Image (cartoon, rainbow, N blue to C red):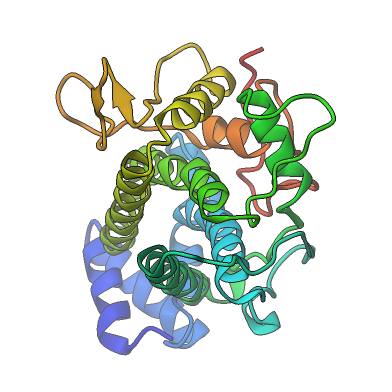
Length: 309
């Protein structure tokens, strides 16, 4: 749980005036300092957020939690053969199971170490977001780590009809599968940043974004060193075909040179909206509420992809 200093800081920095601050304090007192979520919801609920022209902070954090469930399940199963403990998958709305996933036979000690560190970070992200959301945290949705990867690989042209792509078969497949997630995670947190009103939550989200960027750089660098530029560009192009007309994706090489850090002309990382992120994880350029890695959709208010077909 958050300690009192974290919660007091969130209350003080979020309130625009003394009236708001007192309202935060009363709400936190009613809910108990162990659960910031219920108190903050009274001060900034979904209706108020929509009146201000955007989703509530808790809708955004729950959206992020869905993505963290996906990443944590993928990495944990690759490292240990086991997924998240049941205690970290409960919450609001329906809890789903996980299809696919098994331990990777890592032949390279360094790549095993990378997997171990990233798994620990993703597990910590799930714990952190669940704590921040308190009793408002959504449960883990249904996750597919099997057919979804085959569909993604086919869309990228890495395999042909009737073939399958197993992300756990070897190190290269594992790295390419991780590449699908990490770049999307960075752009998702970047896109969410302007929408978060609570400054303490914004700082926390920025911290997660930075970690995801470190992960993405690690995966991209390793792919480059292993001469996997061609499939990385194919995956990048496939993601770009799903999330709208703008060119928001870059492979690990551009113009024949290394491109470890994908940026725009100003040296800035790209942003994706929640809808664009869902287009990628649902594996569709159309408006949808489920598909791909989330066969029954994500849990929470932000659950519909964009229509870019």
